[in-house]
Image (cartoon, rainbow, N blue to C red; front, side, top):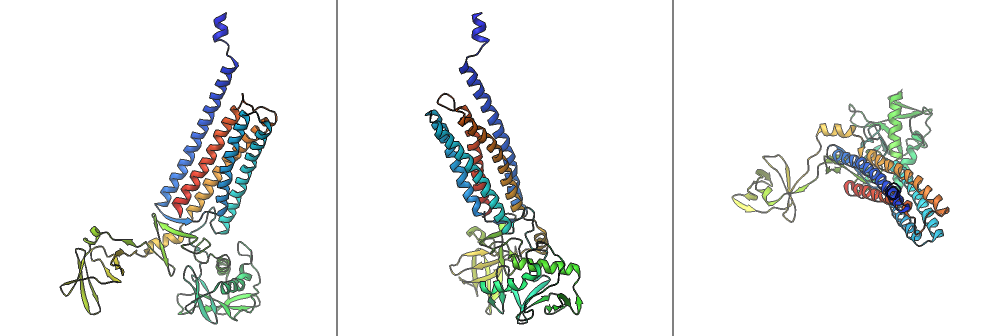
Length: 429
């Protein structure tokens, strides 16, 4: 009988310990499953970045704020356990309540971050190139009958970059075509002072110069013929791109400041709407493999074994360009005598891929942050239970299991977000 009481029944302490072990095991298994899920997503990001066009986008400022909030929430939940051990019931309630509020704030700023991504042209699914109405592809704006060009970064008129005030005037002129719509809706066009100074012109390969559109009775005409529905849709997208500051790329902002484009992991340079692979420094060993003959200024230069010869004597020219005979790479030697391999422009095939490429980077940002937010919502349910129990006095110096296990899960979510945020910051900028 004594043996049955000793081994068949368990003391409250033993039951408490077993319950805590079970909760820990469930929590650990849940954490492992979540880690495996996000490892898969992160691996997909790494592979995608190294295998196709990739947008290196700037993380929204709201994500920085949400990061601070979730880190603070971990501190407040830890303090709840500390206060429970000290039997400070009101402080336990306050700490758990603050943790829940900070968590809600985290999700709120995540939503704000998504809104900032949309505002910057980084959609859940969207293109890298604004192929539906890129400036200069089908239409262009004339000022005083001379074209306003777009070089990928700035609008230029007769060699002068348009000032911010002039750009706003351009946007104001084009606004009646797209207004605040997201897609083309048939309408009568009413552009103020059309033709003075601005006019819209159609770009045609067969024409030497863009030919202005006529605007009569709210309708656009080209060579006396009213534009068809597909042309009006392109015109709408053209105006939409100017108004939303996405006239060439699908993303809003200045190339090199707000975003860049990578191909196979290499950040591309943008010069006059042309994309180039990066310029790289040539090592001393690399110089030995270069061979070339170059004519400049009436002289012949022979490049061999890392040295440059002219008329049989070694020379050291500066700001010197030549083409490697073996690899056909363009080589540049700067004022300091440093050799660089100049990046090649994208090939026609690569440009075709670029025009069709999706902004996979923003898609992954939404996927990763949304999946994390879903787990945060699960955490809200857990925090709500902890809050209710704290008001019922469940937690004290002899009972902190719930706060401890809940803390494991919530702290993990905070660490997971910090890892995701750091990973994205390091690998996309």
